[in-house]
Image (cartoon, rainbow, N blue to C red; front, side):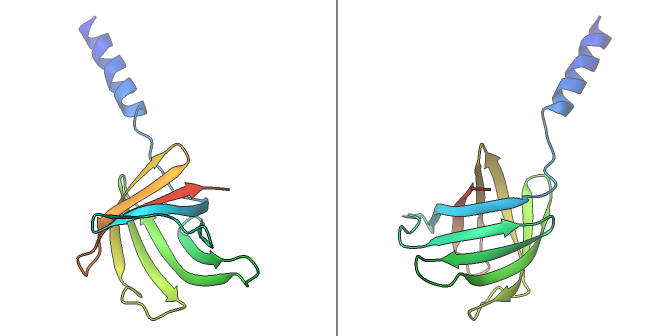
Length: 131
């Protein structure tokens, strides 16, 4: 009886963890906390991230303006960590071709990134899945 219960427990325990293979989809910036200071998402423009299987593209969308691709990059997912490398930036960037490490969590339709940038800035960002 104990062996059966142990087997059931092991199966249940292993099924309770799902491995995410990609963030595939479109996410809109929903705000964040930077060095302990909250920052709301703008109401005047949208920041979107479109994730493919192993790459992403960041876009800036403002009413009446052309959509701007502000960054592109590659990412790799580990069980609770995202390794992200920016490969293109429309503006000068300290992080171009530098791999950053973030902890991630997905809750319902929201992707949360947290980590510390190489310059010491602590980051917690929320991105809501829109597509």
